[in-house]
Length: 254
Image (cartoon, rainbow, N blue to C red; front, side):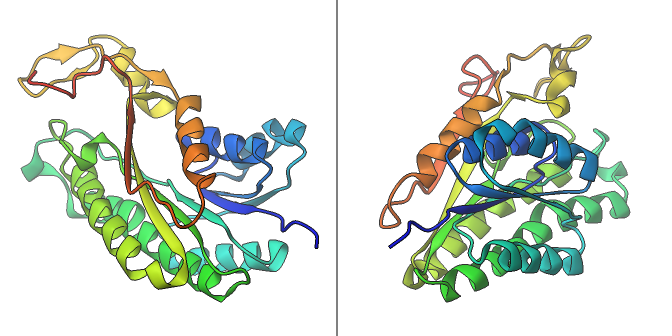
């Protein structure tokens, strides 16, 4: 009997952590569905992964749009027939303003992308994974260090990342009977375009109001962490995993 093609879907796959994880999965032999808002960036990821020999499917997707999410998973299933891994990664932040000054529209945009979009992707993945043969798969959510502790003036991002923890736990519990696992990877200061501000100028605001440059780590290390999780048998799960720049100001009082 021929070995089944392993299939992964990565949201926010055009840049940063999503790109690093997508490339790591392609190196592991996964046919990978690359989802994100910018098709040109997704094509760059697909091109970078060509040397692995793994298949890549580019699907321009805005995860804040429920119809776009349904179309994404339908195309993935039509193309590859199954889904073994979902890496729920797409997310956005908001300008660092006082909590009371954050516009409702900005709050809603962050919630729609970081939380509702992840929930809807999770629903679609479960529907595919519970119906396929063999049944099951892995859902891995990008939580962030912000799922544990906030940065100053980050209420929308922090609230959604705390909520992701609840989504992870509920998914893990509710999907046991389907042989579907759910993990959360909490990432701190991966070197991506979104964290460039941490090493520019005076750096970023600390809890006591000071500004400071913060150390970062290679985003490829996140890819290796995800590969570790997906290579486990489905009777084993890593519920939570934190991977972070060792010198970042998170552990301890600062």
